[in-house]
Amino acid sequence: PVTVYAARGTAPGMGPENVSPVIDRILPPLEAALAASGVDYREPGIFWYEPIPGTDDLGVNVSWAAGDDPRAGEGWEVVELPGADRVAVWTYEGDMPGIGRAWHKFMVAMDAAGCEPVGPSREVYLKADGPQTEWLTELQQPVR
Image (tube, rainbow, N blue to C red; front, side, top):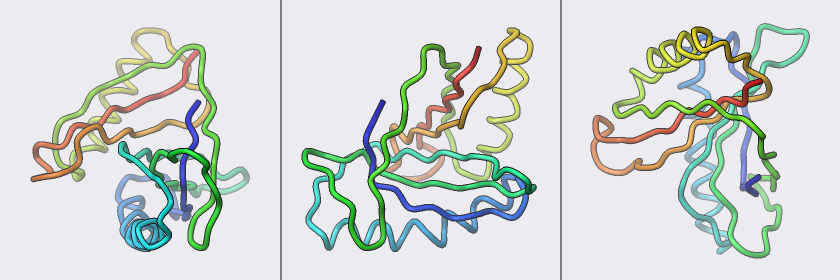
């Protein structure tokens, strides 16, 4: 489990092309609010995605790990992301336009290994500074 400061948006449909505009809309205000508040927040950035029941939409969540004494504030909420007993992990190095292809390869590999996804997936941004072609992102999917 990890406690994070998070903001949420909704992507119309589940395609990766629908997710980036939502992130672009909610990420800058979250960063600005956290920086202005003085709360202790830390790398890595953690994004997670959840289907919205009864729709074809996707809940898009962006966050940073909360430091000591987490507290809610204007522009974010405190969320306790649960741990999992079994998680499939795939490491992706590259820019964000390619992350959809990485997720596809990851899902194919999980299926071939007989893993059934359960619960929301996460992207953990292990290295997200400098050119995006050098970013390192860990894709995580709880499985059974």
